Amino acid sequence: MGLKSKDLISIKDLDRNELRLILDTAESFKEVGARDIKKVPTLRGKTVVNLFFEPSTRTRTSFELAAKRLSADLINIAVNSSSVVKGETLVDTARNLEAMQADLIVVRHPCAGAPALLAGKMASAVINAGDGAHEHPTQALLDLFTIRERKKTLEGLTVVIVGDILHSRVARSAIHALKMVGSSVRVVGPPTMIPREIARWDVEVFYQYDEALKGADVVMILRLQLERQGRSLFPTIREYADLYGLTARRLAMAKDDVLVMHPGPINRGVEIAPEVADGISSVILSQTTNGVAVRMAVLYLLSMGARADEQITRSSDAPTPRARTGEA
Ligand code: CP
Image 1 (tube, rainbow, N blue to C red):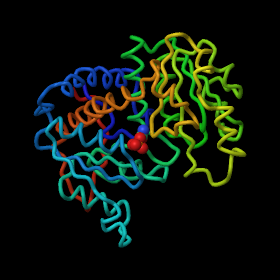
Image 2: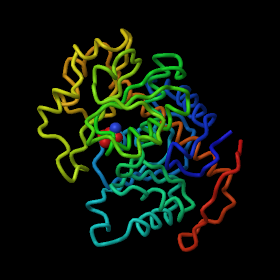
Image 3: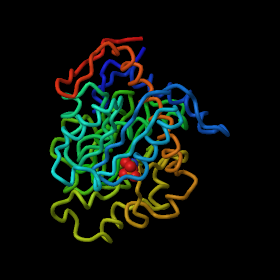
């Protein structure tokens, strides 16, 4: 069984079985990272392109490691020294990469919808590595993988997501994924950072951090997305830290075996105190480790579909968007 869609743009592209398939596949790939020789031949001959229009440490590096551990060829496009600076469009850039037989294109872009636009115009598989404040599906998948690894289940857990929900693609993808697997989700943050459409998301909304933390199994902390905030949504960073910074005192309101998560990069002393970020409840670096295995699984499962569809003629002039039909 592969994935029905040729692309991974949103968690909504997946059904519950596909989500579990990705987590199970990642579990089997994780041990590759613990070997002396961290390589398997699974994607030999495939070409993966990283096309990042925004900064990234974890996502770009882990896609690169994932591709290399699967023996694929990996090209990182440095957007600032590419022909994008001469005015080439996103679509033309991607079509030219596809013309060089790129099988999978991993895209991060500041505009919500940019990866979906490419996916509709190309035969290559497109993976959304974060688009504006829309979605970051592989982050949600690695978050679920990390929770399942530690808690042995995803059902019936209470997960609290804290902070700048309004601008967070991580929160949007995580909420879709957590609801799909039967977790309860609470969000907490300043009213200015809670989106109006929250009423449609089937989550509990809190404004008092301590209240939200009572009985929590997992606390998922978000970074203040200052680069996406067009206007000040909070008087000062210090006040934000006082009200919405996770301290050891606050964390004591949650369950004893609570997991503290953060997608990174973290702002120490703002949304999380250093002793919590580095404390025994923190699984932040495990999230980073697991990101490689999860991205190996995504590359592998999307490539399976690409092989099944090899008969489709590739043409950058007349690309053929395709949907998969449940290939094995
Ligand atoms: N979590 C995450 O997306 O981190 P990067 O921005 O470093 O990729």
